[in-house]
Amino acid sequence: REWEESVGEALVTHTVIVDECGCTTESSVAMLLRLKPQNLIMVGDHNQLPPTSMVPPQELIGQGHDRSLLERCILASGKYHTLKEQYRMHDKICSVVSRLFYNDRLLTPPQVKAARDKAEKK
Image 1 (cartoon, one colour):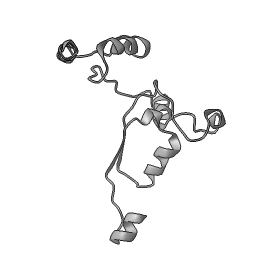
Image 2: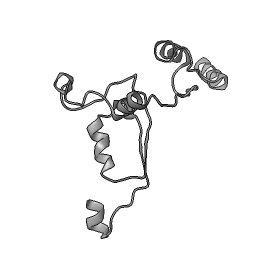
Image 3: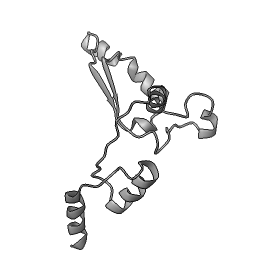
């Protein structure tokens, strides 16, 4: 609304990208849909951190705010794409996360591990 008031024309939104969508409440993403984008890209992991809100979690149960839109879509469609390589976590942490959440399919590329090992020896 602010855009339309200051510019004098409707905001045309082609694509909305929601990062960390797995820990974003459904209602927060729903507000973005009011922009009427042609595409909505949700990036995140519904198996890690739950949606966060200023409302205590126990009050959200049964209200439709205790899960993310990403989780709802995955449960409804069964379709998702999982990354196979990660670049941010330490390799040892990745090994634990991979085993617990990804059936040992998440890997740290060898060049990333080597660069981190080299930096840690300094």
